[in-house]
Image 1: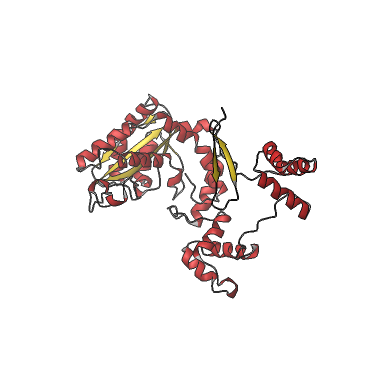
Image 2: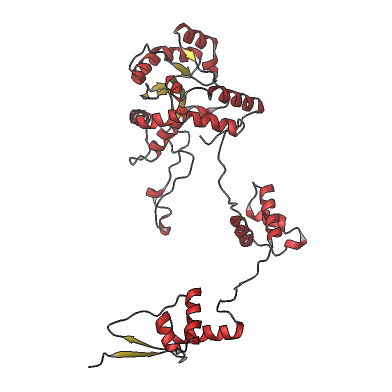
Length: 371
C-alpha cells in the first residue's frame, strides 16, 4: 500500500511540494551559504538534474535553477550587495552631530536637533535620526549624578591627601574608625521608586509613593570599624561643641569595645570638618584621651565609608514591606533595627575598597569619585 501524500499548490502555482504524512519536514527558508551555491554549480556541470541537485544540497529545485542561471549570467554564484536605503548623512555629517551633542551635553535632544538644523546642509535632520546616530557612537542621555561641589583648593588638597595615604598598607585602614551624623525622616528617599502595576492602576492608593510635608526627623551619630558597627546615638538636641564632646565621652568607649572587643585598643578616629568637630574643646578632649585624629580633606563625603552605611540603611527603610513609619518613636525603632542588622562582610568590603578610592581620587584629579 502506497504511503499517502498531500499535494499543496500555492495560488500563484509557482511552488509544488509534497509532504509525506510520516515525515512532515518544514521547507527550508534560510538562504543557502557559499559552499552550497558552489555545490549547485559543480553538480549541474556534472550532468545532474535540478531536482537531484535540490535533494543533495537540501533546497528546492527552483532555487538550484536560479543559482545556476545567475552563474551563467554573471560568472559568480554570490549575491549582490544589498545597499538598502542610503544614509542621509555621511561619516562627516555624523561626526558633526556628535560634536553638537558633546558641545550641548546638558541640552535636550530637541534643542540639539534645532541647533543642527541651523546649518543649510542639515535641514533634513530629525529627532529619531539624530538619536539613532548618537546611539551608534555610544552617546546616550542619562540622569546626571548629584555630587557635592569641590573648590579648586580642596581638589588639590584631596589629591595630595590621597597620594600620601596611598602609601599605607591596606591593613592600616583596619585601625581607622569612621564616624559621622545622619538625619533620617518620616519619608522615603528623594529618588523615584518603581512599581509593577497595570496601566489602569495609576491612581490606586497602594501604588502611591508617600510624600510627607513638614515630616519629623531624627539626627543620629554612629561609627563603624572593620569588624562591626559601634553604638548608634540618637541626638535629641542641636549638635554643638559642648553636646558633641558629651556624646563622645558617653558613647565612644562603648563603641570601640563593640568594634574591637577592647576599649583600650589604640585606633585612629575619623571625623569630618563640621564646626562641632573642629572646635577647640573637641580637639582638647580627644587629645586628653590619647585619640589620634585622621586629617580629613574638606568636601569629601565620598571618602567617608560611613556614608555608604547611611545610604544602605535608607535603602533598607525605603523598601521595608511594613511601609514608612508614622511616628517618631517608630522611626527610631526602625533605624536602630537596621543599624543592628548591618552585615560584617559589608563593612569589611568597604574597608578593603579604600586603596581603590584613593587611586580614584588621584585619577580624577580631586573631583568627586563614583564611591
